[in-house]
Image (tube, rainbow over all chains, first blue to last red):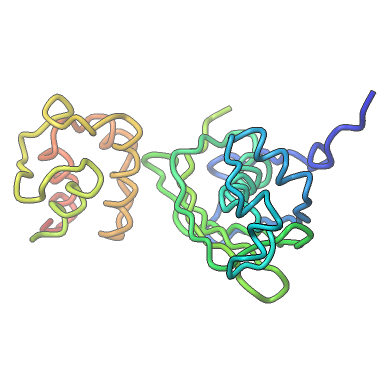
Length: 149
Length: 76
């Protein structure tokens, strides 16, 4: 039986709405591999040569295949659904800004910070940033409702 | 353009000049339960207030939401 993917090892957090405070943070690190890109191509159907064809990518300003921006979007999903708030998350929206190209082999630190909390709606806004070393490669804001159970 | 109408226009995709107190979810195609929550969260942020769950659930018109602001001394 094959090993489970490494992200299965992440501990599923379970913050209730009352547990969450503005300023609260959560983070994880992830190295993006060529296999991740291949999986994303299979999943999404996005086989654009900028991501899949080294010969084509070499002729562009990026010089080698770049990771799909939306694969970084998938890391936002992991942050919200597993780390902050975790189990009770209901994802309502997300903004995505791809600031720098990301390449297979890059290790990203994914960090979210709660910036707003609405008691009336049990909605929180989470500012998400991803860094490669000290360089910011992504930012965006997740709108998430925290369900009772 | 007043701030309240601008927020309504942004979240419910209607021209701010068409915003009227009597509008309900039946009048605004994009007024669904999810968009409404996002709209309320934006209102709270922009006016730096906290609404109660009862106020949010009992509001049936844009005017009802506006009244939540005026009851706190805010002129939307």
